Length: 112
Image (cartoon, rainbow, N blue to C red; front, side, top):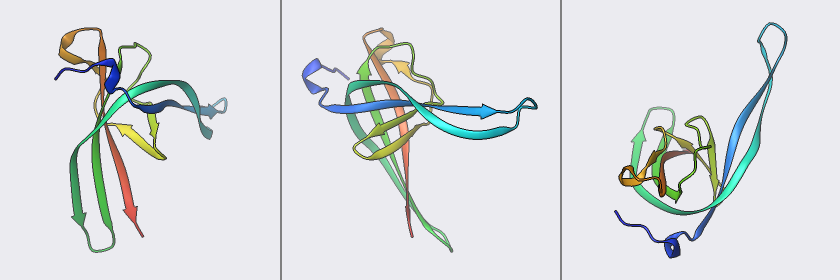
């Protein structure tokens, strides 16, 4: 897969969960802090629809390509186009070269 700078047309935000704990380590509050923004190529690459007895859950997977950076963690969240995406695998360099970073994410959409 080849990527050029002109294909990075989507603006994403990288959010990191932050937990406030007490002296015993109990979680008091969980918030997110913005780590940064990036131009990205966002590609939906898989969708799964499962019908259960109580609810219908749609899972959409995305492959996001950004310029290579070392501060993206698998625990981070990606905010794009009003959606919150959760990484499903550690980010990896495209083709093993430190030019592009690939983040594979999942969006959970629950119909009420």
